[in-house]
Amino acid sequence: MSAKLNQLNKIKVGIVNYLNTKPLIYGIQHSAVAERLLLIQDYPANVARMLMEGTIDVGLVPVAVIPHLQEHHIITDYCIGCTGAVASVGIFSEVPIDKIEKVLLDYQSRTSVALAKVLLREYWQIDPELVDTKSDYRGAIKGTTAGVVIGDRALEQRKVSPYIYDLGEAWIDLTGLPFVFAAWVSNKPLPDDFISAFNSANKLGLENIEKAVAENPYRVFDLHKYYTAHISYELTAEKRKGLKMFLSFITEQRAVISNTP
Ligand SMILES: C=C(O[C@@H]1C=C(C(=O)O)C=C[C@H]1O)C(=O)O
Image (tube, rainbow, N blue to C red; front, side, top):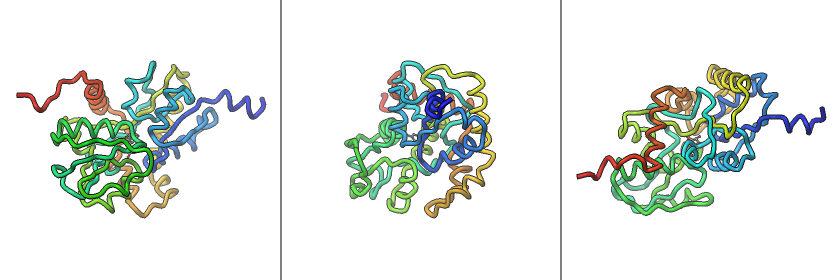
């Protein structure tokens, strides 16, 4: 078979290009299943777009796009989630939350932007102006203008902004449930043997967190702590409950729990 034909038969897998996926990438690249797939790395909003357009078959996608997919299958026992402060998703500000007038929304995100809207309304109960962004906007987080920032840039922003409102922590305080930011979702049924090998590859990565840390020197934040105490990778029954509740919030099937007389 020619190299080109061989590529055509591969399952196209999109993955977020942030540090929090390094353990998963390690596992995939050190498993035989790597031969069966093409790994495409991009920021979350682009991975979501690729799955919706069908240019990839499966992706570690922001869960907020699930209601927009014609067909979806959550295919592994792993995700990007949290059971407490996540560290890399927050509203960053120079002023306390009740003084914020405007919030810039991260163009790289789908889930956290939707989560911020839920929490501003339900948890902090404030109604600031919300502004979409298109390119780097972090320089504009000043005065009463705050910003939702995710991923590695959020880990950097922790060193800049005096007020950090961690969205994982706020969600858990509001609902008592863990949160899922991204999950492995396919837009078509995939072969069972692939799903099972892919699941094992994710597991292998999480058994080798030390190696992923060693391969990715990073001065801004302690990655071992990030991978073990902040990001929670297992898609447990509790996380699925949290996911279901989040999706019901954003599809407006859930009544507003605050502001009721
Ligand atoms: C916790 C994180 O979760 C990410 C947040 C996403 C979003 O807001 O759409 C999507 C993918 C996740 O990787 C992070 O990257 O910091």
